[in-house]
Each structure stands twice: as structure tokens, then as C-alpha cells.
Length: 303
Ligand code: DGJ
Image (cartoon, rainbow, N blue to C red):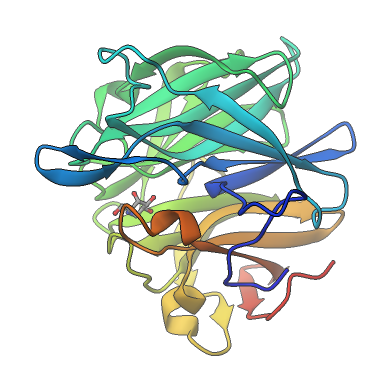
């Protein structure tokens, strides 16, 4: 798989799993993401890429991907937050051991990005179908780019850009992963970071983020903390190689591990209602040593 380009599934169709994440469950990899190969309509005089749902792909080797279809589908009810006039971005899924189910959260918005909500859906199986639960303003605030993180003790957290993207908020989720406990921590206040991707390694939490420049790439930065809900320290840009200043023309979306090896997933956005579906992907190996991190560019994703 050539990094920076759009990849195809086992049927030869482009993989539509943008702003995505990879979950491993019972020996299978599941890749969830935004399905952007959708009709374009006119909303308030502007082109709008219709929301059709969230895609799920499965693989046993991270190279060959099978489309499991839309695991969360759009609603036909114009009053519903899954209607085609909405936006659904950055879906993330966790397995909930207590209930033996799968919980999805994603960014719900309108074309003007002023709705700024989160959606919750639940499924019995990783490939769905996910049943829509509700959309909320988490902790009574606006929320745009978001991710989920499961800590080593099993607790789950949602991390989202809030206060009009000025702050990254880490909110603790309840035991069912379906709502907030009310416990939260604001980090990187006033720094306007988005596209958060977190992981834990040997006593340290790491968070890779991007700046807020719409679809245009910018410099990634990472931060570290000893305590997820403690003080985070911004460290550096982890990217190395050509175009490291603009994250190799990409933007972070998730970090997954294959054994001990960590990989950063990037989206290479192609802005425009008709072009977003052609946005490429990269999976790049991450090296960490204490609070030092490096992510060199690689032309190919190889295991
Ligand atoms: C940057 C975000 O990271 C994307 O998910 C998307 O919301 C674009 N902004 C929209 O401009």
C-alpha cells in the first residue's frame, strides 16, 4: 500500500474510511471511517457531500481489506441527526467488555460546522449494524474533531476540540461508554489543536494533534503526560523527512499497534465535495523513547 494515495479493497473499490480508526477484535482488524463516495446536493446554495453513513472494513493482515458495508447508515428522517444534510466525521469505536458490545462515537455537524455535536451508536457485532442512540453537546459544550481512548485500566475517554476549537477536552465516559461521567480535563488551552490521536507506552501518555487549518495540512505536534487527566506538555513535531512541516501533506486520525509496533494513521485530504472521496491514506511507524517521538516518512506501508 503506497502511502499518501487512496487504497482499494478486495473488490477493487476505493476504501472509504476517512478520518478513521482501526480496532482489533478476536484476531480481525476492523477499519471504521467516513464514507465519502456519496451524492452531492445543494444546501443553502452550497455544494454538500451527503451523509450516507460510516463504513466498516475487515482484514486479517492489514493489507487486504473487505468492505463490510455501512455499519451505521443515514436516516431518512430530515429531523434526525443522521439525515443526509448532516456531516459525520472521525468515527471511533471501542469494545465494551462489560456489555459485550461495540460503542461508536463520531462528530456530527452541519455544513457550516456550527452544530458541533457528538453522536453515539451501539452494535452487538464489530461490523454492525450500529443502532443510533443520540447526539449530544458533550459536557454542555461544542465539539468538533474527536477521538476515543481506552486506558490500561479499561476506562474510556472521549477527547475533543471544544470552545470553538481553542481547547482539547478529555472527558471520562461511563462504564457503558455511552455517556460522560462529568469528570474532565482541559488541555492545551488556547492552542487550537485538532485531529487528536492518543496512545500509552511504558508509563507515558502521548497525544498527536494537528493545527486548525480546515482541510489544509499543517505541522503535527505531540504532547506527553504521566497522567491522562494531568498536565500535558507540548514537546515537538514528531515527523521526519520531506514535508515534515506539513505532516507529509496529511493529518492525524488514529494510532494503532501491531504487537509492540505503533502506527500513525493519516488522511491526505482532497478538499471539495466531489474530491473528498479520493483522499489518500498513510500508515507510518512511530518510534518512542520516553518523551522523544519520531515518525519518519515511508513510501510504503509494510509490516
Ligand atoms: C479539519 C478536521 O480535522 C476535519 O476532520 C474536517 O472537520 C475539516 N477540518 C473540515 O474543514
